[in-house]
Length: 226
Image (cartoon, rainbow, N blue to C red):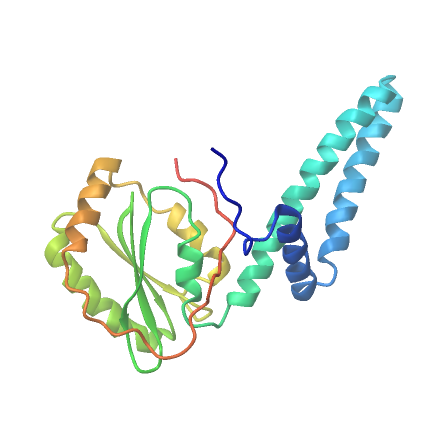
């Protein structure tokens, strides 16, 4: 039985148009770069085909490669555009973290202060990762407090703390996913699931901070951790 179509969910073509508008807003040269990269790829393949005597075959291959290259460049620019739109918003790091592929569990805003600085909890193959948003001099105390609290139940599971931001020693929003992917794989999948279950038993009595959180922000999926 076919699944009912959600009338509020935009179609694939409409989604691509929406993303193209986002790219254009963030970078007016973005879409021309996409088209030029595709056309340049097609031209190079056709020239190679003319030189080698496989002209008609090169057209077919060139169109396929041009389409692929265009999509890759389009995806990269879309990711950069969404990063630029999210940057500076409350909860931006949480939106980026929730777009990660693989066995990751993200709990946004497990700690906050009146300045709307946040600490997010991430559980994955590296172990437990605390990610903060806000100036380093304000979030450090929160990170230390949450790390001590989690280490009581983490036992021998590694607990990392990362500051997301543009300050000295902080990880920029656009590099956050990649930074987490580079952390050591300390736990196998069964151990990751055990840690998740253990942390779910912790009390969650923190009120959410006032102010806007990114609504419906879906980041392009990053590389899957293998």
